[in-house]
Length: 94
Image (cartoon, rainbow, N blue to C red; front, side, top):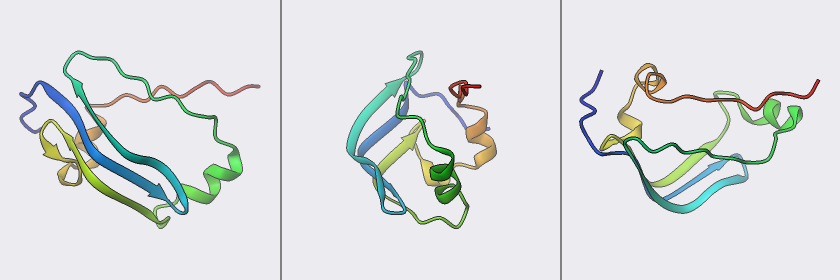
C-alpha cells in the first residue's frame, strides 16, 4: 500500500470525463480532505444504458488533473483503490 500521509485525499483540477458520447463531468475542480464524507448523487441508470456503456472496450476519455493522496489517479492499481473507497449502491425497486 502507498504512503497515504496527506490531508487532501482527492483533488480534481479542471477535470472532464466523457464515456462514449456522454459527458459525465465538465471542468470540475474540488478537494476532499481527510475525514470528510462525500456523496455523489445522480440519476438512476436504466439497464440498457448500463449494458451499452460499461464494457472494458468502451470509449472513455478524460482531461485535467485528478490526484488521490497526491498521486495521479492513472498511477494507482485498481486493487489499491478498492481499499480506499466505498460504493453504496442505491437499492433497486422490486
